[in-house]
Amino acid sequence: MAATTTTVDSAPLRSVFLGVDVGTGSARAGLFDENGKLLGSSSSPIQIWKDGDCVEQSSTDIWHAICAAVKSACSLANVAGKEVKGLGFAATCSLVAVDADGSPVTVSWSGDSRRNVIVWMDHRAVEQAERINSCNSPVLQYCGGSLSPEMEPPKLLWLKENLQESWSMVFRWMDLSDWLSYRYFKSARDDTRSLCTTVCKWTYLDMEACGWDDDFWEEIGLGDLVGRSVAFPGHPLGSGLTSAAAKELGLVSGIPVGTSLIDAHAGGLGVMESVPQLDSETKECDNEAICHRMVIICGTSTCHMAISRSKLFIPGVWGPFWSGTLLELHIQYLA
Image (tube, rainbow, N blue to C red; front, side, top):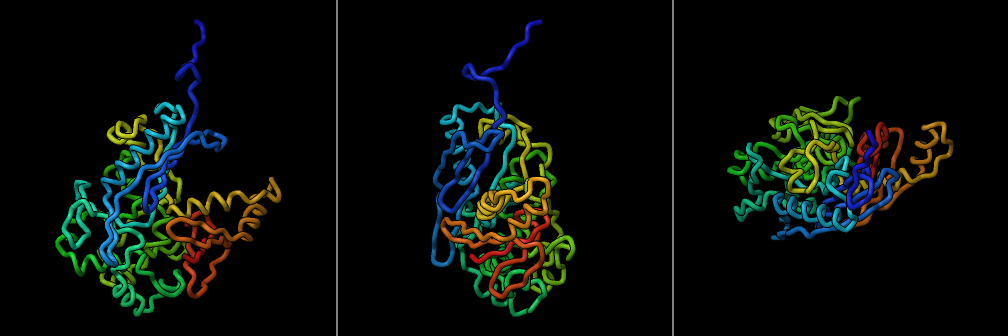
């Protein structure tokens, strides 16, 4: 029997990898070959509502923007959906609220059900953050001595105290990148979160420190939220992309979906890993080089990020966040 080669537009099928980055104002999709070469990219704008200290978005609108960006990137790069072999998400540390059916639950004074995402920059929970910080929990040393109102515990406490109807309706509270991964892979019962989002924004500590500090969550009045499982960034989730999501994205059902990253941390990972190898035979030398570099990640906000082997508790500096970006190393940053 003669050998045959499957082609797309007269070209052999390639192995292409899709990265989706959801920022504050747009969703971006990038397609890369096995060597990391960018084949094509595209972006689509995201709607945002601003009312004083409250800044909100719609998870439905974000998903539509992602679909538009992915399809446009594939078209521009002449990549067929069947060539995409894996998918990973990075997104802002915005808080998503959904009910048991996965439908949006409002986080807005307006009551608008579309507005189910508290954007990372939202500062409605300043008073809640101050109260949490007054408890002097050992947890606080892992974020420079005090929680920011941009982190998730103060926002959750604000919602519990101010939007009780929404609070009672919500089945899952998730960081945006975790919600994207959860919503579109094949395991409806598994809501595993990324170690990146949980250590940096939810006060998950590290494996040595036993992860969640139940006493802290009980003390601030959110003990019912403790107990979510976490996984290292890049860990494949469930059994891959759902058929419904694949159809909307123009991809193939079942391709691997990786545990997500915070958008700034994805940028930090790319820069940190660009450090030239000092000794190609020893990973320790590579890590040593990484630990002597600071990077600046710029976007709507700017982060100064650094990696260390050991825990460094520095007043005013977020971290140490264990394995938040690179496995078994601590990341710390000023935002």
